[in-house]
Image 1 (cartoon, rainbow, N blue to C red):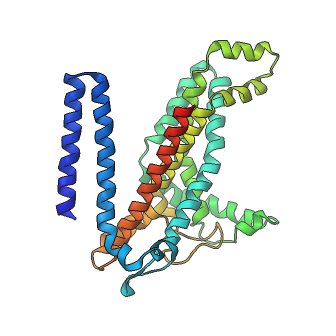
Image 2: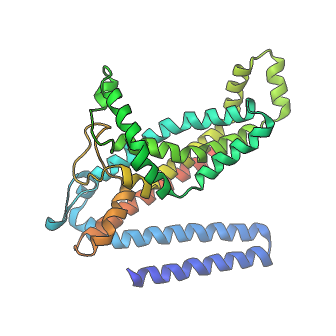
Image 3: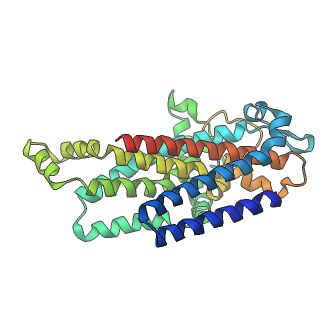
Length: 317
C-alpha cells in the first residue's frame, strides 16, 4: 500500500498547489476549473487505489463477496452483504426521520421564531453539526440506548405491520438505535440548506401568496414547494453524511458481523464501521485487507453516484 499511496499523495498535493497558483495568478474562472478538475482527478485516483488494493479479494471471491453474509477470518471466508444491508437500513431510516425534522425546523425558524431568537436557534443547530462524532456516540451509548430500548419494545408490541418490523430487546443496541442517532446527527446538515433556501424566497413571491388569500399554513406549503430544490439538496447532503458516519454508528449498532438482521431491533454493522472495527487487526489475515478495501470502493462508488445525481438534478432545476 505505501508504494501506491505515496505517489497518490504527491499527485494530490501538486494538483492542489497548481490549482491555487492558477487561481491567484491567472484568471478566476480558469483557476476554478483547474481546481475542480484536480479534485475530480484526486477522487478518481483514490478510487483507483481502492480498486488496486481490493483486486485480490475480487479475484478470489468474485460477486459473492457482495452477496454473502459471512465473516470468518480463520477460514478466510468473507462477505459484505451484512454490512451493505446495515448501511442501507440505517441510512434510509435516518433519512426518513431527519428530513421531516429538518423541513419543520427551517419553516419554524423562518415563520414563527422571533427575530431575536432566529439567529440563536440557527447557530445552535449549526453548532450541533460541528460536534465531534464520538460525543454523539457516547451519548447514544449511555443515554439514547435506554430510550431506544423503551421505544423499540413499545413498537414491537403494536399490531402489524409496525409490530412485524421490531422484536423485544434487552440491550437497546442495534439498527434502530443507530438510525435514530444518525437522524439526530444529519438533521443539522439538511436543515441548514433548507433554512437558507427558505430565507431567500423573494418578498414579491411571499406577498403574492398572501394576496391570494392563503393562510400561514398554506403559505408555508407553497413556499416549501418553491424551495424543493434546496430540500432535495439537503436530502442528498444528509444521505451522504449518513452513509459515511463511522465512530458513532460503530458504538451503538451492535457489531454483528456475520448474520443478516431479521428486524430493526437486531444488531448489525455498516460498511464504514466494519472497516473501522476490523482494520487494526486485518493485516494478520491474507484477504481481510482487500475485502475491507472492496467495501470502501463500493461505498465510495455509491457516494460518487449519489453526488452526480444530486448535481444533475440541481443543474436541471
